[in-house]
Length: 137
Image (cartoon, rainbow, N blue to C red; front, side):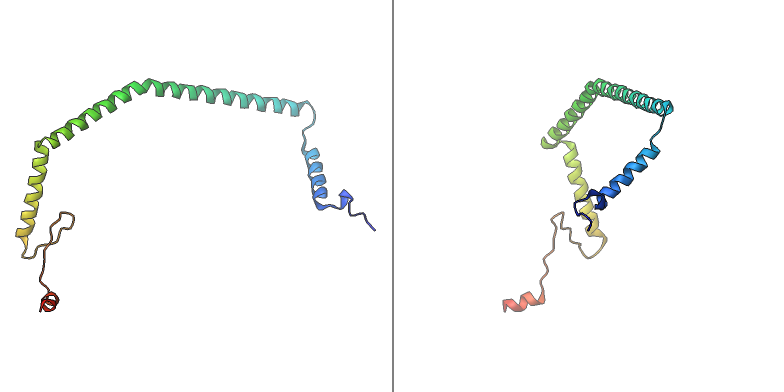
């Protein structure tokens, strides 16, 4: 009767042995394999150095651009504050917007007999419905 504890009976052990045999067969032999390994490591090292130099270059470019970007953002914020102060103070921008909206509403009312509801604008029309009149009686 075969021993159940024998590792040769274990399928995982047999698969590992087969894998080791295949690895031994594909292993490069001689000085040529070592030379390939050396060139692979050298190529990898050179690529790492190039990547590090490029990363440092872009980091320095980003740092150099920061004052210009900060100045630009500062100007934009000043412009936004000036626009906001003009709107609050009753500037022409606010008056022009109100004038345009009023003119638009009047032109829409004059086009047809029926007035459309403009829910976002806050305009609505109350209609007397027959049901409402019946409920009052």
